[in-house]
Length: 563
Ligand code: ATP
Ligand code: MG
Image (cartoon, rainbow, N blue to C red; front, side, top):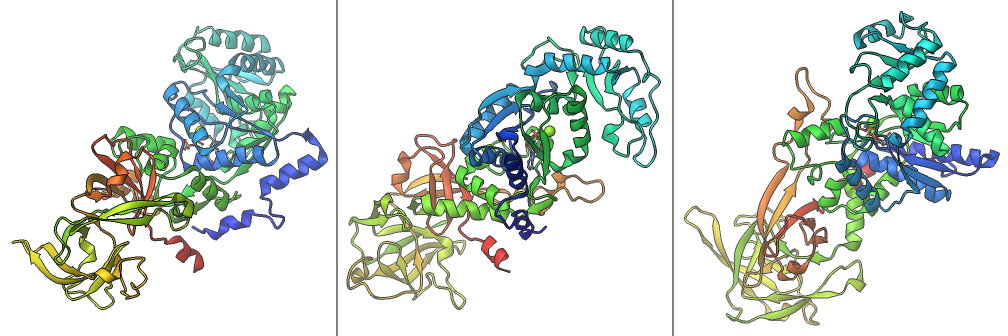
């Protein structure tokens, strides 16, 4: 894992390697002055942060070069796809702040793809193969030795056309035969060894219904869809580099528009997995509450957790585009989230682990309304009112009966400032029968009120509080990493990534919050002073708010980066 690696991707000119290619193409006039990209998800799951990277890249190029970017659903695999995913994908892209010039589906092109397949057969460059799946993979062999030609490879063009039409007409059951491109069974690149173009699947498709029972394979559908849409730069991840000769072969064989495929490294993040198949397993087997569980690396999970679109876009920009695989430390993402929320999130006080504090010399029944700034980073966010009373909740952790040196919070005989209010001194404590602390008794000093001219008395610590009479209760969900190791896929023999799940990734607390929060809506972000950034979850009701901790205040990234 090397975080600094990513910086290599920025060329001296300030351009990444993809921008360099694009600018050269613009100079040479290869595509006129057009830059046309696409984002091509398969609607078989929700988008994750890796997809966000690809979205920012493709839509970012559109914005930078005043070009275009399509959203194309690569829906060639009807057994795994669903409209639920189509809708979620669109919502996520919009939420990130991007809009597509056109929305297409690979299935829109099934008729054209079929006609082109006939064209390739007519050129003598494709054939129907009745070998079984096992026979085909056996004949393909290994990269170091030439493969074996299928006994069906030299069928006549007429026979191939007839068989392919009958495949389409539904005359054969699933698996009976496939259409293969006739390229080169000796190539060291296995993808060139007569790749499959079509397979038979008598499965209903979420858009084309039962119209088709043959479906094109990814390699055949993808490049041709790019060509139909007039894409200039077809950007994909590194694993498709070995597919590129095939991408080029189809375009050249058909003599159609030929986009340039460019590969970049997938985004990988520590402490999570990034494959839809694995994320689906987490959902289906109940390890998380759904695709939008706030611990998931999905865009919808991050949204629910309180991440902002700007923080994700900024993260994608900071990571840059790399040419070789690497793993990015998740703390870089958290750093971006904090940086954005620090500017935007209003401050509020909440107590997660309460203990009662009583100010003995403060009159019973007295209430004082104090002013608190909503965001020290942004004066335009104004102030709010806080009510101060004799009995308060404070954090249990902010008091120690026998403190170590340098404990700057409250202890017997010690003094702290109550944020926005007064300096207090702890005089005595009352314990429960089990030895835990029930009440902390204090004295306050009226002349130390925050903001008063004479309040120049100094103490080392400031703690937060809420008034017991005014506080409302809320459920607070604290999240930790979903996995307990940086690379969950790195497992011992016989174990899977599931074995690396962190059993303590969710902790639920009953907290006390400022009453002003009750009127707020889901997804609103806050900083709970001294505790972290939180946002309101959709599980909230009119009477009870539920908060998700978005991220803690502590920042490990700058430390790592400074090393
Ligand atoms: P997964 O393996 O998670 O299912 P995928 O590549 O099969 O991902 P697609 O829906 O096919 O998912 O991906 C749509 C686009 O997003 C593709 O162009 C793909 O290259 C890109 N993409 C997917 N995962 C990542 C990633 N981790 N980093 C960057 N881009 C990604
Ligand atoms: Mg895919």
